[in-house]
Length: 310
Image 1 (cartoon, rainbow, N blue to C red):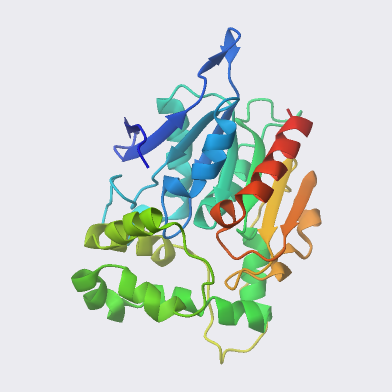
Image 2 (tube, rainbow, N blue to C red):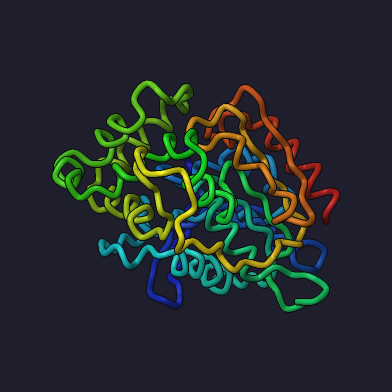
C-alpha cells in the first residue's frame, strides 16, 4: 500500500489528499487525465487496480474526497451538499493545472461524477466544457433513482439504510465507536465480498475516527434524495418534479455489477434516454464494489471505452 500522496488546497479552503500518478506531459502535449472519485465508505484506494493498469498511459488523479481519511472533514451537514462536492472536483482540477478530463466514479463518487459530467460536458455546442468523457460504476442516474425510491419496492427496501445513516439517534454510537458498528447494523450478512486484509485494516482505521465517520455520514444527511419509509404509498408525490437535467451527450461508459444488493439493475431501465452516447457493460456475479471485486472486467471495459472514444 506504499504510495505517494499530495496535499492539495482548493480555492474554497478544503484540503484533499490526492494520489496523482502517470505522465503529466506526453510528447510535448498534455497527457489525458482521468479523475477517479471513490464512494462510501472507502477512499482513493477503491481505484488501486485501475490506477496500476492505466497510469502508464493516463494521468490518474484520485482524491480522498472531503470527509474522508486525512482530507478536510467539516462537521456541519451543510458542507456536504452536492453542489459543494461537485465544486471540489473542478477546484481540484484547477489546483492541479488540469483543463480537460474524464471523470470516473463509483457509488457516491459516481453520483458526483454524474453531476460533474452534466455540469460541464464538452460537446460541439459547448466547446468550453471541461469533461470530455464519463465513466460511472454502480451509481444511479439522479432522475432514475428518485423515481425508483418512490415507485419500486425493491429499491426502496434496499435503500432503508440511508434512513438509518440520517438518524441522529445513531450519533452516540458513532461518536463512541466510529462508523463500523453502524455499518454492521445496516449491512451485516448482506455484503458478500471483503477486500484484502491490509485494505480491510486500513478501512477499519479510517472508520474509527469519529470526525471522519460523521464526515462520511454527512454525504447522506446533506443529500436532497427522499427515501420514503417502507409503509409509504408507492406513488409519485404531488410535489414531485424530475430534476431539470439535460441529456448527457458525451461518451459515457456505465459499468454495472448485477449482484449489487443496494442498487439493483432496475436502475438501468430507461438510461439510454438520459444518456445519448451510452456504452453499457454489465458484470454478472459481482457485488457493489465492482472496481476491486472484478478488476479484470472493469479494466477491460475501460480499455475498450477509452480507446474507442480517445
